[in-house]
Length: 306
Image (cartoon, rainbow, N blue to C red; front, side, top):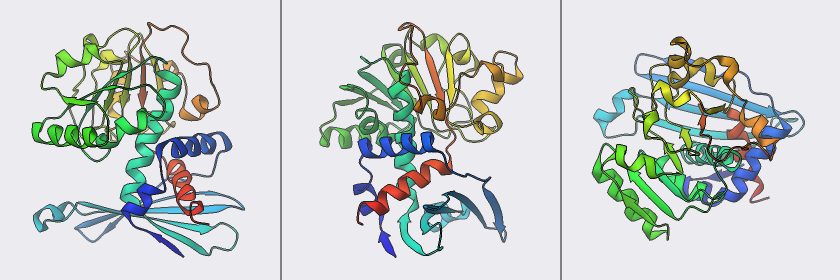
């Protein structure tokens, strides 16, 4: 069984290859049952997220969530990904789950942007400077000519650290402290936060801009106000987003967005090359993540060394 730590996992998942692998998996399809959630005593919650392609590979992500770890000086979340032969059940690889998840999340949004963002989109505003936020500029630069990256965070120190990191990688980046002023200048806005209150307002969005909402994955979490979904092309990663994402559920409850208004999923986008027709029309992509993307990434990691 091959083993991949965080660094080896990152090296095996360059964004152009990862975006292509996720696109192929959405086109080809795989079996993705509902995730299982188990309470392991009072302090630990375990999430099991499987996916497989019969006759090829079976992958399983295990995520352990321990909120009390903050008091111990430990991360609240640990994740690992194991890949098996789908015929024999033989274990093939043990992969760092945190790095795999962060990179496939950024890659999935970049894949959506390759269909939805204007081909000439060059200015990106990143909202949130955490692990996923730190990967959004390099991921998007694999699909669009991004040459101006703005970074905003509630914690200016985090934003500054990310700007320095991006600059060291040769990516032009600058920190912004006024979100309302920065948003109208952006061709692409990518949000990767844990916010429970809307951060982006519709009247800040420029015509033809693309809004990417990554961070919210529960009904209580929101990154954009309801009006962001009015008069725009709305796309989601999978149908699960309509059950989990507060960004979608709230405008649906308010009658501002109908489920039938959603144009389609990332599988639909992956099968289409011609989606954007009106360069002045805005688009929104809302994701909550799927084990399909984990499987695509896990296979790519394993096949990089065989």
